[in-house]
Length: 486
Image (cartoon, rainbow, N blue to C red; front, side):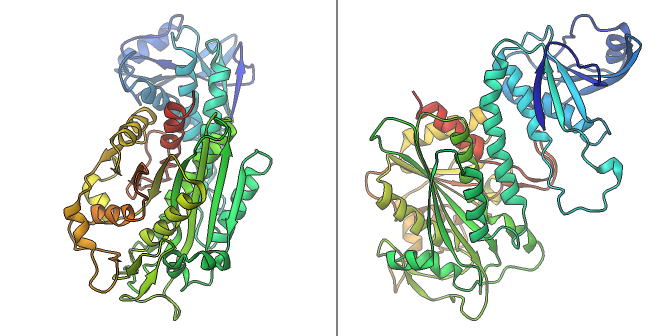
């Protein structure tokens, strides 16, 4: 969706929206609107919408009031996004190609108005490129929104949100595409195309280069696939000269059958989004680069496909990671941690980061623990954990901290190798985090975000349709803006 700015409602637009705080009403509305809204019990609650038809200057208009909740409070920004998204959801397939949002008398700041526009934009994203027989009433028609009489400074605030929206949309595309379209090599190619000319530096390692470095854990996951594995790094140096970078690492299993430890057939098609961590890192890097963040940031993604052919690794195999630690592979469906351990080690060796954070759709156990409301956060550093929790709260990509400890670590000791890739049935998300922690250098602040329940939604949310949510992009971007930029 295009976002434009104007001092008046364009003459060709037939839909005008107003953002309404709880128990308030914009001044100057026709009595039919105010009385109709009252009769319909419209109170301006978040997500509430009232529509009526009015005639102005001989022209019939569709006038919509979208609720934004209380004028103050911690949820204000999220509610403003929801107000914008509610307008989009109402008119996305209405046959209307454009709408106006009239900010006259709204009392909103520039940042608040930009939040409304972000909600409008994010809710407009759909992935319909393979749908050839949609009925007209189900096709997206809305392609433009015009901000009318926006507060001073809104265009500048929107420029930042526009970069965030581009990152979220890129992540959603990567996650939503089927595995015959997005696989390790094509993931890299899509990033190379998207980052071309931005000033970001991309590094790609192929299988031969990874083998020379000793990445036996990552390569072991992909050895049963005809799709070659890749490691991709996206570097953005726009912070203090010589300053150590912050590195974000993403799990990129572009399709996960479980390998020889084959998953049940029902629902396996969803495993195209097992690269949601890599998608979040790539999308966040795009946002960071597009808004030219004043920070030194690197995104690293390990990209593999986990398939069960005759060359696939077996339960009981022992592989040697780049760190030199040996791993007994008890379950080939616990593959994400094998990808991440080599990517984490390589990132530390290559970039000597100030801190490192990984994102992964790592465990089904995390969904059992936290459902689809929070990503799980594990950290060896309280300051880093608090910063991530704050960024999650501020961005809406919420996290909940989970424990680490030596007692859990003992659960993944192997009788024949340095470590095994799974522990017992209980504490599955924790033992996965404990596994990763063994590959973090002493003294390096590290956090692990298990986002298995967050990257895909079976029903529409506040600012997304059913499907890929883009979770993680705004969290990473907010963390960078709050903590790494001056």
